[in-house]
Amino acid sequence: MNEQELHEDDLDRAPEDGDGVDETHALIEQLKTERDDATAKYQRALADFQNFQRRAYANEEQARLRARADLIRELVPALENLDLVSEQDLGPGSEKSVQQGVRMVRDEILKVLAAHGAVRIEVQPGDEFDPNRHEAMMHIDARGIEANHIAQQMQVGYAVGNIVVRPAKVALARGEQ
Image (cartoon, rainbow, N blue to C red; front, top):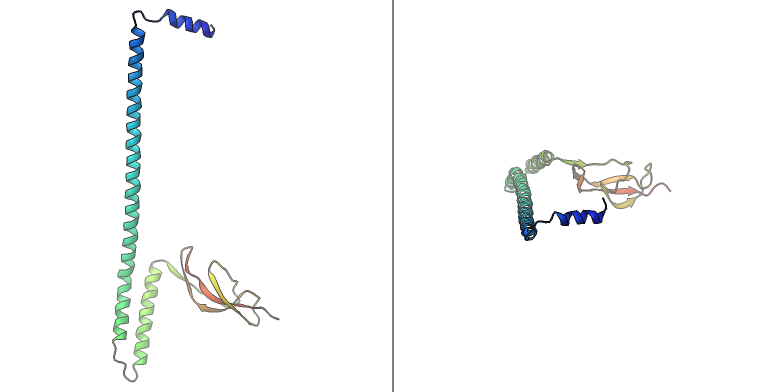
């Protein structure tokens, strides 16, 4: 059967008295209803997704706020200890107790940092310079240390996981001349 024969068969089966027009209109109305339903479902799904995104963002913000509050809560005792040290009467011989108090506060702060995953970035003379973890402050003469290797640590750095919070500040060796 070819295409022309198919069309002729359709004509032979066409309903009498305009029934085909009514069926066509009914089919068109059905398709419009299905389209409108699909559009409404799409719009509801889109609105649900936008609400989900909004809630997720709000939850993330709330989690960040809670994390900051927890960190502050843990640092407050160290701050209070610093206040106690600063309010001490500085009479003769009090240097030792002030120094001891400051060390205790420092240790307290280091414990809080460690509890939050912070690690110190410390280096030794001769270590290889890593620009991702170290910040070169200067070049100095340093015997026995290869050029552009660390000659001296000037300040400790800190990292949390693979994020460098502050690089270790170092002096690099110029190399032997």
